[in-house]
Length: 320
Image 1: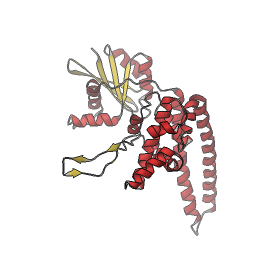
Image 2: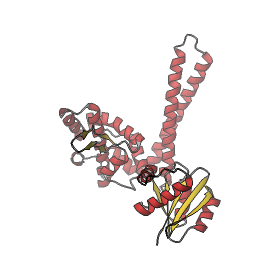
Image 3: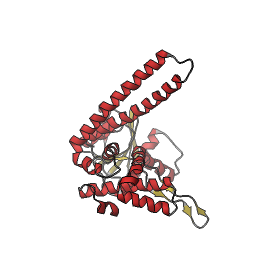
């Protein structure tokens, strides 16, 4: 019988729990190779380890288990939190959380985790660094503008800010070239297909490839819209409660924001998106609502093109 093992992952430790005949067994080890070996020596037969996706802390552990032929599932923390709420949990400790995760695994039987492509992980880190540099450059630019308008502006401060902004610009240029080079070298066909879609830019293309791990996980448009947080979320109950519907936003915010910006171009140059946007506006939808719908359609177009392994085709696009 399969043993579902829940692991609460933190920076320094791993809290582990599994049930034998309804009785919990708890173990605590360090979040390092020596702790991994200790856990491996104590795991029950036919174990399936479940953990939350906790930033960078889970990855080394999950990789270790998979390479040692242990079944692993990595679950969205929101799913675990909602499961705990469903069980009316009022306790929040690492030990208790590991038991909740084990119960979640036994109840939901989450899908197996696969080791991501090393190039996807590299692109993920480079894209994260790029976003941080853009934020930093924006903050420094605003500060430079504020200082420059002061009648008591410090020449030294302005000089250092200007130097730092120029340095960030050079770093961003080199980073963009590196990201594009890795993407073309390893996912050239996917980049070619996605960039053929009017409105889809290179940054969004790379973000989509990274988010889907090179489309290894799914090429289904509806699933991708849910992942990006672009799925509609109706709000109504019976005859008295009928709130304003919105998108869920429970998804990849970076991808969602990039798709929204792409929709501004798509309504001008993408025939299917342009017709869709025009129809929604004529039906009284606000411009922002229509643009979000176009972002969703753009993502479904991308899924359809990748699935067919063909460049942009208006006939497929109108059907997406």
